[in-house]
Length: 155
Image (tube, rainbow, N blue to C red; front, top):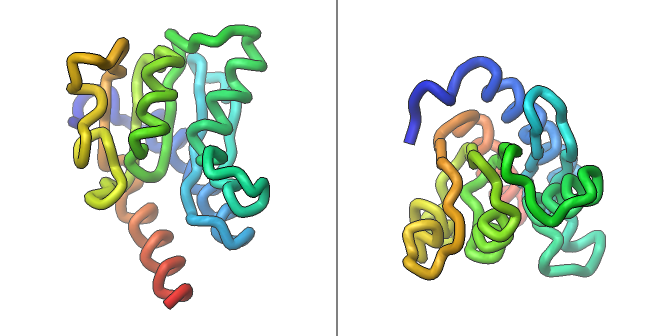
């Protein structure tokens, strides 16, 4: 979905997420970056760290949700927006729902592992407690290029 919530402000926050994805790639991690924003304030930003932390849950989204919750002293982030360079997987979609994120902006779709507009379509399930507004395709060209370059180098 795209619309009035995908302007210059959103692109600037996605640029921060893309910077985190680049840092993740430089650490040998799958290049995914995420940023949590409250108004114009960046609460948290990070990239994937599953290898570094030996933690399969250390996806960029989970890391920034944890940090933002700690920053605000709350398990919920109902007034916050999440920017992520790749369509979230089922685990991350669940965390986004439980955190009550207001809006999700993501760059590249993920036909294989995504769970927002592909796969399980988590937010459309009747068992989903909360579904954020979703906007896709922001920074998509750069996000796809980062992923392609990363995986080509691995082959």
